[in-house]
Image (cartoon, rainbow, N blue to C red; front, side, top):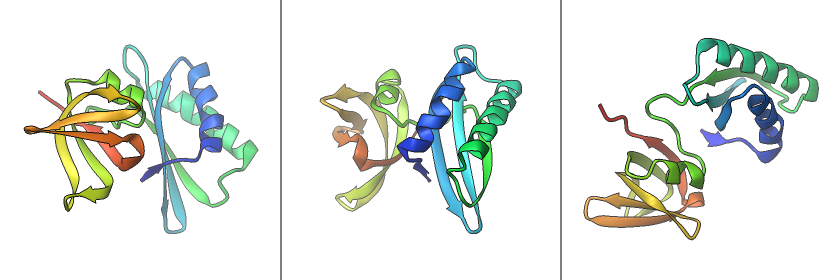
Length: 151
């Protein structure tokens, strides 16, 4: 599942922000005849079902009017959850010190999946400690990244 094109984000972001929430990320996946548009939202004290319903209702209206998704799709609005997805350099910076799992676009030494501790962002690159090794990755090299919940 990948992030959606910028023109879809530009329609969704203002709606989410106007309802006092943060747009964490948007994913779009084609699944046969039906597609899935998943929107992650958050706010300072967490998101509830009513927040998701309000935003879903508003975004649905905007998408219907703009008609930019031609095939049938299911709209899903939710909190990022404990295994929060990471999309931007700001997300990686915000969660420095946390453990994360990453899937890369292309393998490094035959491996695409890694687990490690986020160390920071430097020169537009994400730094992750994997055991005793340090991985330095451009954001474009990361296909998917999620926090690993710690209890």
